[in-house]
Length: 213
Image (cartoon, rainbow, N blue to C red; front, side, top):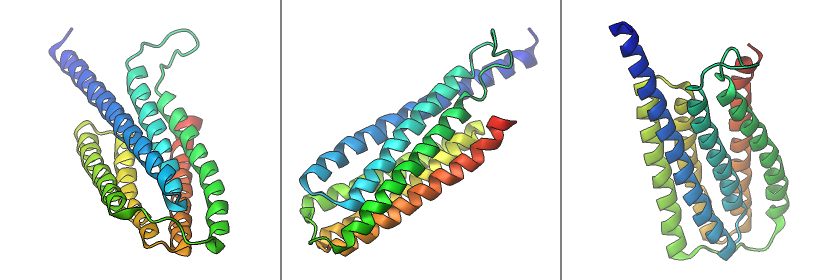
């Protein structure tokens, strides 16, 4: 094997390992956030927080498919897959995007019906601190994913980084429920649901050409 070929193989192996690490970290962080937010949601029901949890679940699946995509990219072509498994990641991401859009539609209906509800339960100071901590975790995850995407040239991780930054920004809307006004909570939930739908739509539109081509 030539020196050039060895360097290319080494670079490819390093790229897949970093991609797998980023995918696993995305799953771990988002799963921890989903569990923590679900516990908080149980104590203080909130439409906005419920929509945020739905978005977190889609991020868990997205990270899982990213990991599997990098892992499958190392598999040798065989059988009917004579061109390899390069589209596995795109297929998974496309499925997650459709699921995000489906969840967002249900959240929109719930948010609209909540505008006339009674005042929502406040989170308390402790809950408010947790919400800001959740947003900070998303910020640091986005920074890591962005740096890794630039290092290995991954469009998938770059998209995940943008999604994390968006989650950080939208997550700051959830504390509106702390004010105890049902219409503020419903408005925040509606906005988060629309952003979730738009993110899913953009993801599906981006992945579709990869699947067709």
